[in-house]
Image (cartoon, rainbow, N blue to C red; front, side, top):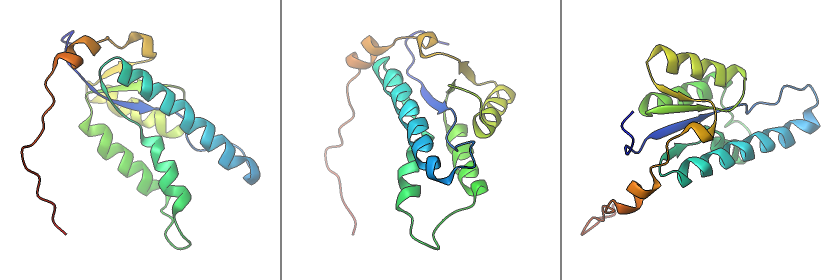
Length: 140
């Protein structure tokens, strides 16, 4: 990898609770989401662009009766975003994270097992000029 290149990094880790206790499921999903967010913050601090699929947790919580999607739809959504990323940060084993890791390996993506292994390009990131469009037209 080019040392100063900013990467889109997919954060892969457990989300779905592996328990039969329905009362504990939301708490565990929230802990897993918080862990992924914390990792995403570390990716940001190093000057890269994290994609945190766990943020769909908040969409899931707000879905009304009849709006729930099957697990396969969520996996498909996650794999679509993974394909758009440059690298994968693998936090811990789970059904989904393991499938994402396998896909990343098969497609030659750069894989990080710890945030400490991600190169720090924050200096490059602060030197880049932000793209600010002169005029934005909003369609309603």
